[in-house]
Length: 250
Image (cartoon, rainbow, N blue to C red; front, side, top):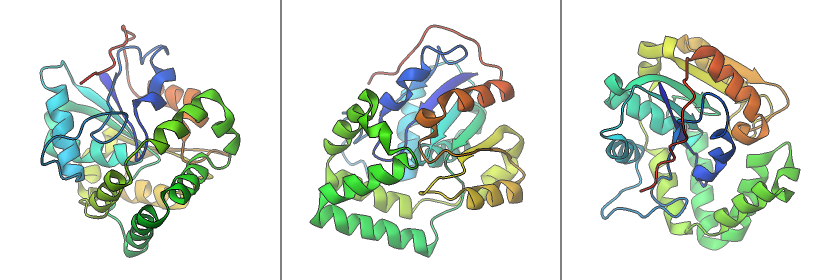
């Protein structure tokens, strides 16, 4: 299987840079979704999760699968939508700090508050978002890769983030998708995640019969905070050949 590394909200393919030199992940494909990492937004693109999944299918067209979709946060939502639409192309899904349920009313309220903050005070939104993202290790933002992430974050267009947040609120529930493919779907999450609570993710994985692992003491940014542990778990569950890195440029 070929790993496809899918970043989350306000992130970019840069977050996976350290993975490309690791055994088993050298042939990984990483993408920048429209609106992030300098990726252009196609004309008429509506920022829905279904549109992101369709866009991803266009990028992977002609490439040899099956694909192992490794999605962080929003990337996990896109991975499940992709699996639902194109199951014959997918050999497995790893949800890193992500889940299958649609937004409940509380989470929609939080997203609406973020949309309002982006209109009134984008700098406050970026600060609060980054603090929650890297909790409980704020020192990450002082590291070179953390500073690079924050520069990329500040370069994003608030109007794009607002549209993506609306798309997240309207996304489909994929609990049935996980129930159908649960033996090939894995949840990985941190015990200290302030964006998606570990108890909620554990409960959903249990209800749907999916495999799961919780990494103690880590938060939402597992691909950086605990990259070796996440990689080791994935390699223990899937057979991934080590090939030359193939980052996807569009």
